[in-house]
Image (cartoon, rainbow, N blue to C red; front, side, top):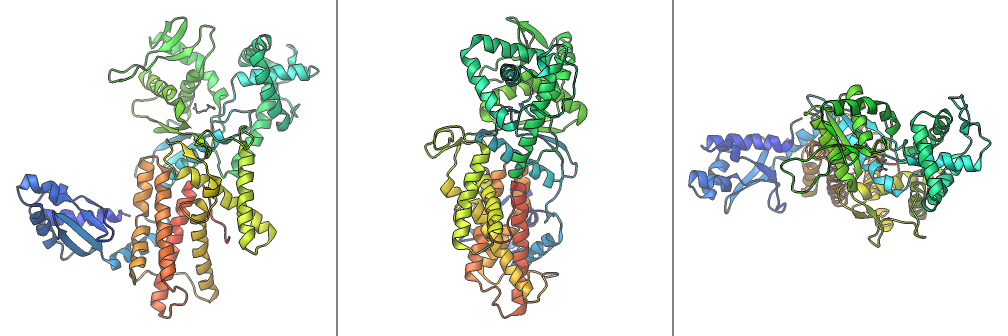
Length: 588
Ligand code: ARG
């Protein structure tokens, strides 16, 4: 469906033209004075110079032609030249009724669906997920869902960090602890191991121990580096260990991400890109893109318009080892080959921005991806504690994701158990659902690139701009609709008939903005716009709810119109939270 603002604009354009002015002046915006009007057009002011006329006169000319408008009920030219409009509520009602009938709620899907790859999550295997991984997962999941809702073909790729030095460290530590394992023997042949010789719990203890030890022991570090080298060059036993690590970690990661309602289409990783590296480097050398600079192989990525120095992208160290940038370039080679994406969106800590500028430029310059491929870096800021420093446990350690979820769930459980009388099992389930909304909404309601403060008290509150408040609103609507149905009435075929009060009209106008908001959130890769919208929508609903006797309304037509409005409001809220990556319980 066309956006409601576009329908108004079309009428204004006609009026501008009929009055003898260019239609480009008919730009309509939401009112910034909601007390006076709902939509406004400031084009008369813009046209004053061209037409050498007082803006108010132009505004009056245009208003004079709007008498017959289908969508505008009241229109006024106001000094110095504003055109203030209120919409016809029959028109808005009709618009909402059409939305309700459309499966996509009036969302205009892309005419030319793109192939979009979202690179998010990015955990490093063998290390527990901690709060640092939270933002990429939450923001990425939402962006993936928004792209999909817009009708694009989308793949979410976790892009595991599964090929680095951490693997060499684990191998070295295992060799020290369990020398009896067969894998350290050069002659080991068994490529496909059965059961892993460690659990995820052990692994999570082995890695930090090895990492700390390597920092103080030169010899150990050398050994770990060598083990990394051997693994990367196909050592059979080490490859078997690597398979074990992957198997154990990936199972654990899947569980953790499932708890967050995050789910990846592709479980690829840095290791998958390695086989593309040799041919890629060969070509880049042969075609003159890569050259030796102080012993390292680099690609120049400077551009004339740079205002700050962008260092070359390094793709091979003097010892022949490849780097983070090499892997990301090779991953693009692989993605181009397998999926030929129109767009790749990376959801990564904003401190990695320079790395991605280098990789993107190198990829375009060398033809790894075509010039037309959009490579987007969506950097995110840090999640801080109330002290303004990166979020830590109470003891000052790194907060594991699992523990954070448990803590929030516990907090929600207390709140739910305090004031409700539901069965234990239901309260626990609900606490989990509401807890996830608290975490996700708390994150997504901030512009991704900004740092934000993770405030448990505020995020878990049922009041204010929070996930639980949004869910509470949905549950409230569900409860009214259930009561309506329990009284024997059906929700089928109900239509919104118009607005009977100011708060009802306000709610209608808010709900009608849905398709425009989602389109904008997609174009700007900005889930926070959806949060801002549903907060407004929930507020509009709650005001209407407090001012209106809905179920007690005696006039049947009026009551049915109210219920129809509730149905569409609920659908819109649910579609939005689904795009944010959480859901609402039945009751709370
Ligand atoms: N594993 C990386 C890290 O922990 C993040 C990966 C981001 N994605 C990418 N394609 N480089 O820093």
